[in-house]
Length: 118
Image 1 (cartoon, rainbow, N blue to C red):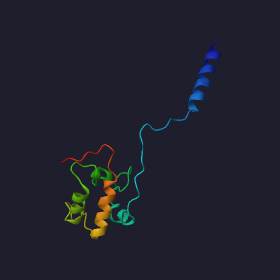
Image 2 (cartoon, one colour):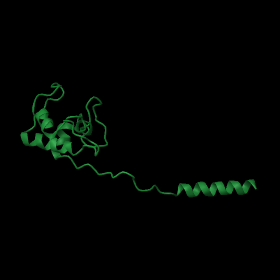
Image 3 (tube, rainbow, N blue to C red):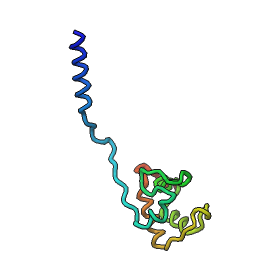
């Protein structure tokens, strides 16, 4: 009787190991690729694509920045064009078209539940 119970348990575990997971319950959309220059200009410190972590732990990911309260594409572009909070580590220049491209890309990283705060 004990052998039969062990055999049934073994068969049940073997069958369970062969199961596949069901479809994701959440609609997961892949993030678009960033403009080609973004990785070179920003990727040394920031994770420019989810789900990666920033190389510099003190630098927020682009996704985290895009999901900050009150941020719009315009305010982000203005911030990128003006002086940065950390000029000694964020000493770079972007052309106006590049600034707009970065801001436009970053806004695509917003989560589906993001709400614009007015």
